[in-house]
Length: 87
Image 1 (cartoon, rainbow, N blue to C red):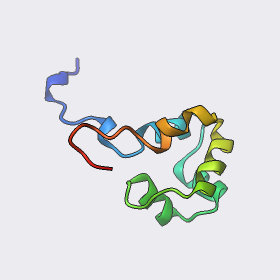
Image 2: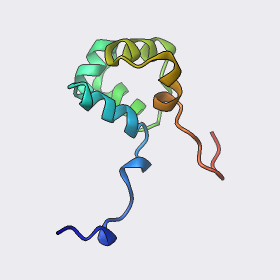
Image 3: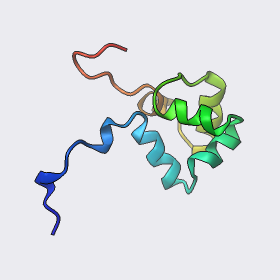
């Protein structure tokens, strides 16, 4: 049995955790999504780690690939800033 009190942190602290989950639930790996939207592996890594912003063209292509509706874009690409943090 897993003792959850010993687990530190949470996957929700990972930038774009929900977007990554959408990749996997749709059957894609990061590299496949990167190829589809026309960026390289390093660029994709930087975006997923929150180091570089997504472009509107990349967001549009990913929404098309992953079936993300317009009203869902914010929750995947503009995660809520926690209180006390700045955007």
